[in-house]
Amino acid sequence: MTNPRKNPQVTPEFTQTVTLVVHDQDELHMTVQEAEAEAARLLDTSWWSLGRDLPIDPSYLARQLGIAVRFEPLPLDESGNIVIAPDVEPVITLNANDHPNRQRFTCAHEIGHYRRRKMEAVTQRFVDNRDTLAGLGTDVDEIFANQFAAALLMPARRVQEFFQLKNLRADEMGILFGTSAQAIEIRLRNLRLT
Image (cartoon, rainbow, N blue to C red; front, side, top):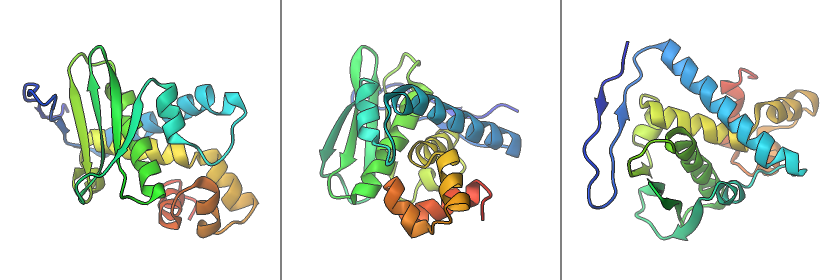
């Protein structure tokens, strides 16, 4: 089954709206697997191979990919955004007023959008507002970006190691991974470790 797409023309503000609705569990499963694999590839080539360890620094990875990262005050309901335009350096803007853990997740999330959409030859702007499509689990792009961010910041192998072998609690793991305890708890559930 194909997805309905809403794809208006690029506006002068370099904005494109892309809405893809998940229709079945197979599609959701594929999206999650693709995001996990893409995050693992990025970590293998740009993080672990350089001898780096936890916590993962998504701003560093963004710069390695040629993405500028800026911290600016944004509206209260906006965590961040990425603008991807042909022949122009992509730019991630993070809300300077957010907690560093939120900024890290948002940066990783925006890298997920970039990795999924960078090959398209149109200008795109993904804006991540709190409590919208990003958290509903129905938009394929947002599911991918959220799963990518979780897999990038909390790699499955390391989460499993710290949880099962070292018997660490979620709050202890959050410190090691540079995330919140709540993010660790969600990751543990999604990895079926709890």
